Length: 186
Image (cartoon, rainbow, N blue to C red; front, side, top):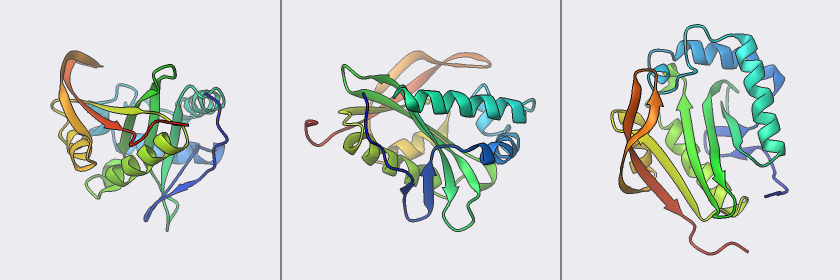
């Protein structure tokens, strides 16, 4: 899949765009701030996360974007430009026009609706610009905030996949939610 993509994506409160080198320190700060919440669900979010880790991650994101392999963006506050977290469309299956949405928000900004706002925007982007037909959200059963976002965003609950997500503590069951494009892509 190769598309002519336009950035940033803007919502009422967010600017959603690819990471820039200038964001490395703030990414590191946001990750370290969020170890106790985000780190429970994402294995890379540890107290050992460094500027080098952020820089390496940004290169991976940039390469994946160029190759249309994944679309990972920073979430930035429209007024302050503070990095609030990240959203991605990954696990793409181009032949089937399917992708997965993942997201996280820094601890000090959790519970304020930023993840929901980002999911709704990235869903439109995926169906309109990437011409996907199906988007999934896979959330560990005990990850209440992610499940709440999936439900509030209007994603349809499809069931539970046993041992779907690998956490630091081992495999856990996950709720599967899905969005569907309203029409066939062109």
